[in-house]
Image (cartoon, rainbow, N blue to C red; front, side, top):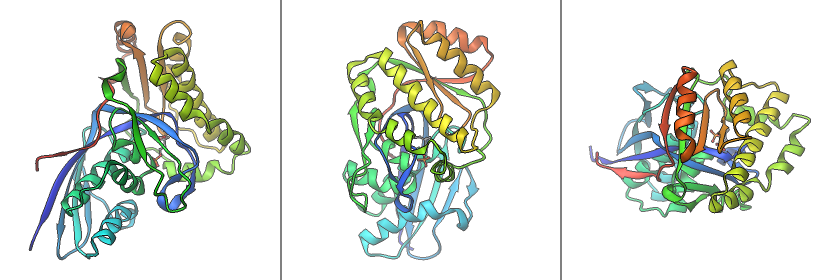
Length: 322
Ligand code: PMV
């Protein structure tokens, strides 16, 4: 059997201006732009092998994903098959160096690594924006794990999504921030982000939320480019709290008591020092601070007895040796 194989690594990304809401769920087209950074020490590695016979298969950390849960993966593989005009099957093996489905964006790094490995193994040399579009088919946020550093995802207007991809607005070393990923829960989240987004549309606050989020990515981009921490922190909290307030109003609570405790503490600290925090669709909290307050924050996090990973802004998806 002839084999075509490639391996790729992609980093999880954490949104500061959050994406929440889809204009087309079948291809993960967002309603408004979002802005995120890649996390240097949280990544997925995926090996893709195209074969002439058999079935598509995916293992994540040695767990065999059942065919009923392969939908997102098949969107990526089918797009490649369409491009190649072939009917080969793909064997995918993926590993994460952090717990999956806990609100630490494993679907972003996983789908991005898969898009790069599977397209390269198929002999396609896609541009960054084409790869970002391909990764988006697996998970909306995955589009942002293809370029490096700080990335902005355009909602685009093409009904097919050709203009809904992410680009880098600044490289990883643009701003010397400390990042602490505080692990509160390693249990998979109870409500997937796709399901939650579907539910949130029914909230009485939905329209106000969409309106308030339209310009968020643009405003965060300005703050990042200027390295303006006070504006950055304010927008970071605004976007995160709006998402969680909306989710709560739709009956979805991603917080654990410890998430609230840290959130409350950081919100208070942020009035005096350059620190802020955010939570995606899960209980874990990501704290960002300027380098000068790192010793203080480190002490504080350790003092609370929390399990954490200290990291920084990371690079884009890359091919690695098999
Ligand atoms: O890409 P998804 O379907 O995992 O949705 C991501 C949603 C958030 O993480 C909460 C926000 C974001 O912009 O990443």
